[in-house]
Length: 403
Image (cartoon, rainbow, N blue to C red; front, top):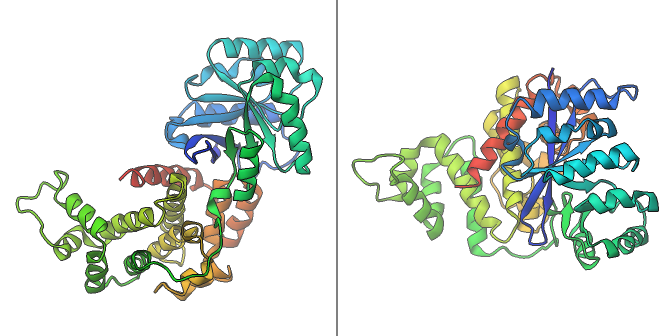
């Protein structure tokens, strides 16, 4: 049995990662409403979480995991590491005596408890008293409903988590209401769409990224653009002269460093260095997401032998959130880059067929399993390799963003 797991980031006020909610599905065919929730969840937990390292999905950060009534009563959360596991009690779990007793024991053993999709009613008081975090959905209705729930919790002194935050305006509203944590993909959209001339330094970074993502690498152009950026030049020479390469003779020029690394390594290294510099005032998760999508799309091409070149798919994923990084429109940015028309059409208008690979990556990362099934069908591929591709892409993104 394959276990399908995705994650959604949870942020602190400073936009640093606090943890990830893990979203799961037993299998791509299991969307029928008659499936027993406890059975599906138990099997998935045992086949996925308990047979692999949980940190593969969370990079060592906290893991928010949903537990049903029966799983709570049977003390299943105690099988997970208490230092990083946050036990989410689903909104349909009632505060009956067995549930409260089980949750009290779980909390006493050092586990953090969170109430999911919270809507205040007085009968929830026993669970509220045990919870450390209360999650409130910003999509449950007008903002007045959110405000009512916040007011009802003021006397309890709990940490509040705002779910489904989709814009910076909502992020700021949640801060103003007193929320401590924030969940959603608001960071993956442009904060402000600007149409102004790019600073020379950022334009040069875009040129570097354009050059390293051409099908045919032009070493002369690449040397020229890299040499114009002192920080990247320094990091490149420092990297190539490190003990990792154990060079007898030190490399002293940009040209030597580029040639020595070779096409594959120089593309990977400079892609992340340039993207990181472009996003130096953005959340780290934005770069991690960019790296994840790039590797996920590349692995789709490699594992399923798609008609698109793996390096083209890597570029597609890498540039998929360049608009959020640059706070500019995708159309405006694409005009400045020497990318293939196929990639530009996919990113600007979504009309190129290759965009289905990116849409599959986006759907998987958000745990939108019904959409995953749709794009699998459009690409005419099976789902058998997707869990392994997802984990590998996560691991590569974690490593690359720590360079």
